[in-house]
Image (cartoon, rainbow, N blue to C red; front, side, top):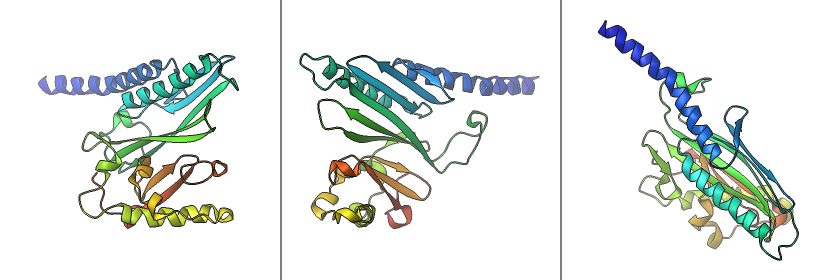
Length: 239
């Protein structure tokens, strides 16, 4: 009877897991006044004469509060600017979409009914904003390490040892020059070796992808850019 009771308890826990996860995701989305559609996407929309907000982002990221805090801050900035006396060139716009990247995880259809996640998950937000500043796209990334139960930043991405910039800069410089041949682009070491430019990234099994805002390295016409840096060419990751 004890074995049956334990088995029943385990089954109930497994069935409750997805319900808790869905409820948490809906709560996360609800903090921004949105609603969950298309499975794991949160849709947040507001359309007024002064501003247009359209945000669509994945809600299965395991550490959602920093994502909500970031989007709330950006949204409130646009709304406050649009409603300020003397605001010009209305309506202001904020459009956000997202991509999810994983490493060290098998492909599975129903993750709630299998073993716990391992490896990392990255959520990359791409934001287009037109307000009182220069129009352009911006990236913001969030990465979580399931095995160590912690967020991953550039500061703790690499194991102690060689300076990772020594490996990152030449790959990024070569790839951006390849992407922009008509501009004869050259990423100077002074700019390209600054770690501040590599804070937005995603981890896959094969590479670390670095994302760069509009005008971060070149003119706004180039829009935002990204570069794959093979993990084989990088120092060991601390994940």
